[in-house]
Length: 228
Image (cartoon, rainbow, N blue to C red; front, side, top):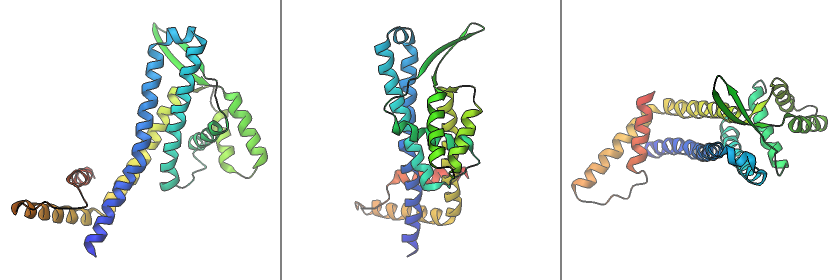
């Protein structure tokens, strides 16, 4: 029974990673797309068709990033209506799902010889959406918090918005992961030792061990334990 319980602890840690890694991959794809767009910004900004095509792909990648992050929040985090930024990101996800396209505004800002290229999300469209949703659902505090965040911003820069969201998601992931490891540290250590001993005994008699936990997962958990 103890071994079964220890194995379930390991599966719990692996499941946290399984919920997080799709987000991380989507975030990487989004960043790569944005960098590619900005690296060819002169050509794309002068060609409306190319620019719109790129922007549609950027919005799609952003949507995938937010959606996959929300999976993590929906599983492991309670609603925090005091966090206006997270409320806004949740409603931005809903806004994107209701609109086939968002017209990004490309900007080039020059200051002290340094060029800053970025995309703006039009505030008016999102504000109109939030006002409509608040009118339909006047008791939903999350909508009001999202609007308060939007109202506090002079502009919504896509680059800064998603980077800030990544920090929030990374903090949530680390908190969940390491709190779980701390909770089961002794049991996990015992399970790793037993697994390693069993694998060593199998190798000594040239026995191919069919074991549900591969070495990579054990090393990963051992690494996490070393970091707490």
